[in-house]
Image (cartoon, protein in one colour):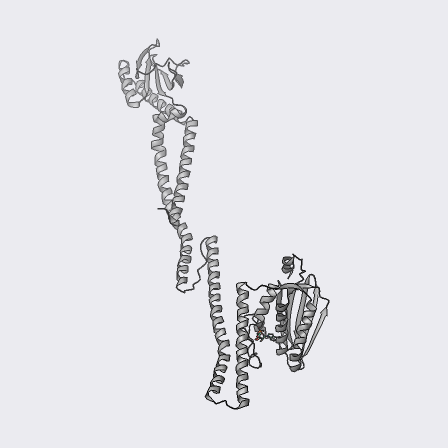
Length: 478
Ligand code: ADP
C-alpha cells in the first residue's frame, strides 16, 4: 500500500506528528495527576455552590424550615454531597445517606472552612463548611480521587472532554493536514528529480541522451550528476567506437583499393611487361604488408584492452637494449641523413619485457627519424635516479603543433599530412601501443614539443629488481 516514496513520506510525517501529540497528551495527563488541578477545580465548585447557598440564605430568600428541602434539591442539581448538622452537631441531613458517613470536621471556625476529610471508611473528601446564621453547620463535600483513581473523577473527565479533547482533535486535524502538505512538498522536492532520472534512463534505451537538471536534495543532485557523467561517458564511448570502426575501415580501404587496382591490371593484361609486373607485385606486397601491420597492431591493442597481454618480465640490461635499437635504426637514420646518437648515464639492472620495451623505443626512434629533416639529429639520453629510469628521445625535427600534442597517443591519431609524405605510412597506432606497453611496466610516457625546433618523448620507469615488491611505491612517485 505504502510503496511509493510520497506515501511513505506522508506515513512517516503522520506517525511522527501522532507520536508527538501522544507524548504531549501523556505529559499533560501526568502533570494533571501529579498536580492538584482537579482538587482545585473541585474546591472552586464547592466554593461556588456554597456562595450560592450563602447568598440565598443571607438574603432570607429561603425560610429556615425549608432549608432541608432546598438543600436536597440543590444537592441533586449540583452533584455535591450536602450534610447538615444542627447546633448540637447531630446530622439532620445527608444528601447521600447510602455513602459512608463523614464525621464532623475537627477545626471549625465561625465562618467558612475548607479542606480534606476522611469518611469512616477512609475515603477522602474535599469539603467546604459553613456555620449558618442559626448555628447549623453545612458541609459540602466532593470525593477526592488520587493517582490513577483520578481517572474515575467526573471533574477530570469533564476537563479532558471539554478542555483537552477538542484541542487535541484540532491539533490532530492540523497535524494531519500539515503532514499531507509537507509530504506533498517533500515528495515533489525529492521524487521529481528522481522521476527525471527514471525518465532519462528510459529514454536512454531509445538512444536519447539527455542531461538531467541538478535539483532536489544533495544526494539526488549527486545521483543526477553521476548520471550526467555516465551519459557523457557512454556518448564518448559510442563516439570512439564509431571513430574506431571508421578509422579501421579507412586504413584498410586505402591498401585494398591499391591491391584491387594492381591485381585487376595484372589480370586485364594492362600490366604485362616484366618490370611493370614486378612493380605491380611489389606494390601489392607493400600494401598487403601495411594491412598486415595494421591487423597485428589492432590485435595487440585488443589484447591490451582485454588485459590478456602477459609481459615476459625478466632482468634486463637496458643500456644493451637501447644500443641494439639504435644499431638497428642506424641504416634508416643514415638514409634520412639524420645523426643518431645515444648517451647513457649508468643504468641499473631493471626488470621488464625486453621485446616489448624494444618495440617502444624502436617506435619512438623510428618516429623521430621520420619527422626529422636531413642534417637533423635524434638523440637517446638515458639516466637514472630516485628509483626511476628516465629515457629521452630528442629530435631536431619539425615538432608537433600544440593542438595535436595532447592527442598523439590516441588510436589512429595522426598529425595532418604526416602520412602522405612517408614511403611507409604509419597506422597511427604506434604511440597508442607504446603507451600501453609503458603503462604495463608501471611507467609513464610524455611528450614536449616546440614547433620548428623538435620534440622530446620521455619514458620513465620505476627501477624494479627481480625480487622487488615495491612497484606500487615507485609508481606513485611517477
Ligand atoms: P604512426 O604509425 O602514424 O607513426 P604514431 O602513433 O607512432 O603513428 O604517431 C602518431 C602521430 O604523432 C604521427 O602521425 C606523427 O604525426 C606524430 N609524431 C610522432 N612522433 C613524432 C615526432 N618525433 N615528431 C613529430 N611528430 C611526431
